[in-house]
Length: 478
Image 1 (cartoon, rainbow, N blue to C red):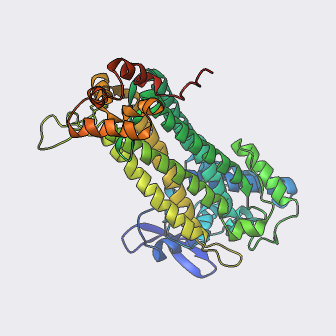
Image 2: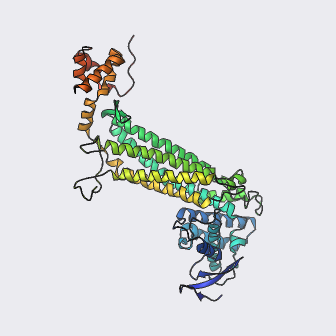
């Protein structure tokens, strides 16, 4: 086939599909169906990144190898396809995957993008130059897509991409943040401070106990994320177009799941019900819900950090944060808690992504959910943002947190809620009267207690010991 000049002077070749001829850039490995998608879906700038393209390579490589083993592909054809798909998996052909997320809801055009790229590369390996138009010896549909449909390929790609990113990116980042928070909790175990509920003074706790709550919340989110990875191990491959498996060998589902397991090192398995695997995406919804849980936890931690660090002289000022950069273009010397701001913005974005995923997951109709590209795009964006934000918050904030012992001690000594320690001796009402007197007359709690006549200064000192108020009260001796 003779190359021609495209409308913008770009050297083009003519490629064909079932609808006719299409001009394609001469140096691109994609074909007519990919080009039609480029022309028909000029919507936004979101494109699938490495995780989805890598997963496409894995699926097509696994399919070629299994088809070769079953004898439905010739050994040579299977080898060419597997080698070409391996290049997709390795990232050598990312520039040839140009399609936007906002396309057909089944992901068909991205599946065909992979089929066309792999077929053209495979044909080059076979000695047939790009642009010959022969689609031989390797055809994108007849060979690369053999025993598959976009309707079971793309959900499988979604699960592989999501499971690998959760396992390799997000879970390690959460574990690092949790470990750093736990280390700070241990380091601050002896620092008694005033607690706060409703943003008002409460009974004491240690700074270490306060941070242990954050670490435990992160551990909870970590567990939920881990649980969702197992749900993502179910693969739709073998369901073909509507879940019946028509067009694929009976042994295909188990064989392809085994091959994907071998290629990824993750315990993927064939989905027990292919109709659910195509028509619904509860595993993706659940994974997104787990990222939302992490976002909720990180939002709480970020807000706590910026409250405790507020000031430095007119706020709580109980901890200091690393001074990473100037905080104001106008006010000299101002330093802001910017890592908490970045973290909480990410959390807000993730919560929004989860809302969209919930709507999309509920939007399936009959045998196919057609929100697949948006589902995986939003989930992977949430995973990437949270992984990066957790690492950034750990490296540039948590590791540098230090207590301001002087401020902590002053706040503790001035708190009226230490009066709670007097309740066993005086009862609730008398203790409340002491706190009220101290507040109204600007007295220390000790001065108000003695002035009330309810107890002596020695009795006050014996009962009000903040360091003994950070755990359960010992049982009275009989």
